[in-house]
Length: 86
Figure 1: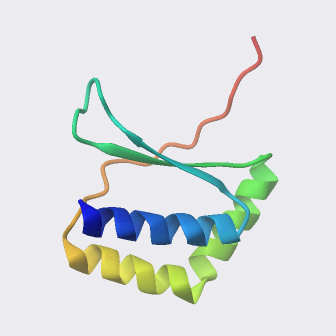
Figure 2 (figure 1 turned 45 degrees about the vertical axis):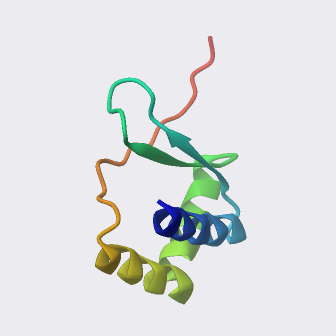
Figure 3 (figure 1 turned 135 degrees about the vertical axis):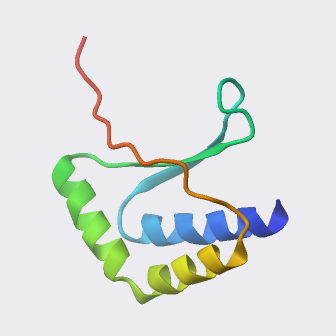
């Protein structure tokens, strides 16, 4: 878990560098044992700018290769959501 959390912290730093608000959650009900890495943005435009910058960042590319090679985690799914007014 220590090695995994070090990879998560490194990824969070990269996303934050490019403007994302990052948080990590432990799932307590449902898919117990999974973790959720979330990023938040002011707008879809901010999301797009951040995503473009992250994926072009050599630090992210190196992190991604190390993360896959580590075998410490697997990607379950991705969701892009927006809050609705009520």
